[in-house]
Image 1 (spheres, rainbow, N blue to C red):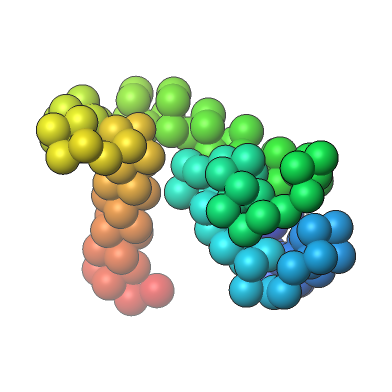
Image 2: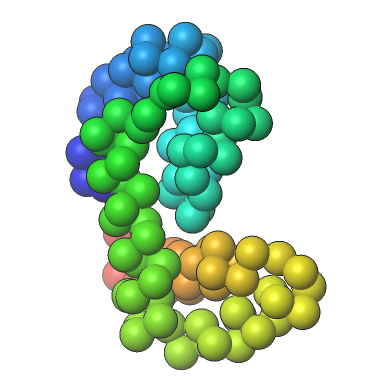
Length: 121
């Protein structure tokens, strides 16, 4: 994740995705956004009609694995509202774990904003 989140590396990763999958920057970015919010390479590839034999680049797999770890372990352990978020998402027929991940990340972002505003970051 760190390898992708660094601004300079992000452009390299997006360029690699563009080259590997013969897509423009927008679609390469959509892949990484989809992965970041709990989606999969296979879903992205299917939606954008990428060669069926294509496989994720190592950096894409690494980001996917880290997000899955956050979604399936850290969020469950460290987000008190996780169970409630999953239950509500199931009722709304949403992808429960991706919805809970989104709420978990929003919760962290909110805490960071509050901390920065109180410390004048």
